[in-house]
Image 1 (spheres, rainbow, N blue to C red):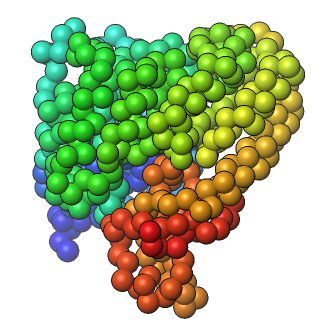
Image 2 (spheres, rainbow, N blue to C red):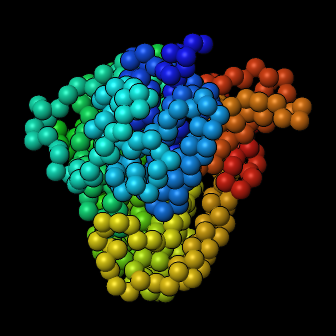
Length: 465
């Protein structure tokens, strides 16, 4: 490799959610088209591009730690530059640059279109002025006609697995008092259906068999294009694409999850009967302070309506405990709801102030030790309940997408996911049984199997009808 070639090697390190994964692949596509060589190992790259997450404090810390670790690689003489992009970089801009001199540049979302030119300038020794953060909700195009069509060629897969995220939209129009995402991701902006379908076809040609539809609020898809029911019509179009066997929808707002969408997800052939519902809490008084809507009866009714179509559906949600002013009775309301909801996966987060949010200015903040106690209590309860939910599935027939086949200690380990399990954050399904039958299974196969046992939230299933 010549020194010139070395200066054009880039490694992308992605933190955070599936939406960030899509952003990284779009960055990779632009860089590859601009003559950069993409490498997997940051230690062999002249530039390490860290796609940061800025959602909660723990994610921010992970991003900072990753940037520092990447900066340490410069001691080897191979790595010449470490560049921060992503939500943390967009959210804090110059403030992040000042606090982290180890990073050679902090770039915002507006730099993505010219990312190759930006990296060349950095490698040439130019000091780029970090962007000034602004409220991106004010940048929404007035008319859908103002939107530029996306180019599939601008994306390059960084993972070779049979599942891939596919972005439906970006941004969010909701004003939850605890969340800063709309300020740095912008107002809700749906992608045109033709762009979504074109990218899905490209992913299918790349060997993808399951599409994971992602956005900040999938229930809003199409509202800015004049058709709030656009997702219901898009789903069967995606499942009809050659090579695509399963489509999964993520991040549904309970207050916006209309009956027609429930039916479409639960009954459309090829769509996973899986409901990723962002409840966040169950006590109506806490939800109002969060600037959200609902109560235990409404949420349980929503789950019941979906289970009327698909009794074995998968359901998951996240919850915030210790929100300002949360009483013991409100916390008990949450725990009671979680006990009744029969969720397959539960994420528990302790409240913490986020810069620029309305809740950061609320009074009645709970002591840290109280928040920690409630996190522990609900986490323990969630682990018990989700393990019980997995046990309920023993005897069920599941369709498993195989994502990993490996040999560990001389034994074949086949890992995948059933329709009731979302990628990364939920449990997994492990195929067990006759060794000869298992030996023919490959990554990307869909295998019909019967659940025979469980391990926590994970399922053990034996192939066969």
